[in-house]
Every structure is written in structure tokens, then in C-alpha cells.
Length: 155
Picture 1 (cartoon, rainbow, N blue to C red):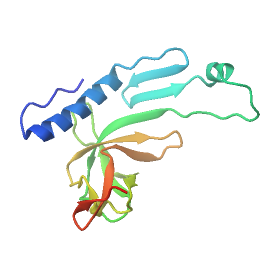
Picture 2: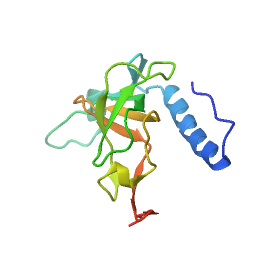
Picture 3: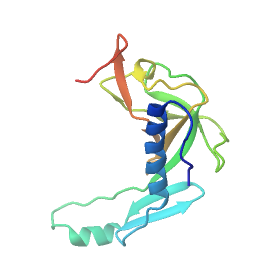
Picture 4: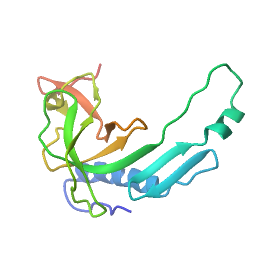
């Protein structure tokens, strides 16, 4: 369970506490039979019992699967580079970066370069990443927005 922020600029504290609330809710998430939640050392895995789900869905041809999602805190190992890949290290339970650095893919609304997006990520700053079922990692927080000439692009 993360502690709420109490010091700093009011707008920054409010935004950080929104993130803390979201992460704390994720930690308290429980399954309902179809949704399976496992809180473990590797993070929180959210999966779906596909057999129970498919039994409740309208019958169509085809099928598929839904992969689990593991969300972890990570520390940026570089300032925001050009492109969408960012080097990070996963955090231990105390929020300390450990292990080898690896790249995560960051999605940028209306843009393609992290160094031209907001918020600007600096080396040493925490972010949240998720491991997809296929083993690739993506950034899930913060959400990046392209900037042009110092202004946020809203189109």
C-alpha cells in the first residue's frame, strides 16, 4: 500500500495522490470467478478464466485468449530519448531499482518521440510498466502527450 503525498505544490500533490489511489485500489482488487487476480512478488497479475467467460458470451465462430497483465513500478535509467522506447529497471518492494535495465515501449498521444512529450521523463524518476502476456513491457503511467513548440497538442 502506497502512502499519500503531503508535501509539495498543491497541483503536483493532487496528481500524485490520484496515482497513489489508483495503485492502492489495484492492490485491493479481488477476482469474481471469471476475473482472476494474483498479488505476488512479480506484481499483480490480472487474468480471465476464458472457459467461464466464453460460456457467458454469445456463440460465434472463432475464439481467443486474454493474457494476464503484470504491473510494476520501475525507475527510468535515462532522460526521455527520441522514439518510444525508454530504458528502465524494475523496483523492489522498497521502490529501489534493481536488476538489469531493459526497454519499455511508451505510447505517445499525437506523437512519436518521448523527448518531445509531456510529462518529460528524467533519469531516476519512477514510472509504472506492465508486462504483456507475450513478455513485452509497456509504460502504463504516466500517459504521454505530444508537445509542439512547447504547447500540448490536443487534436
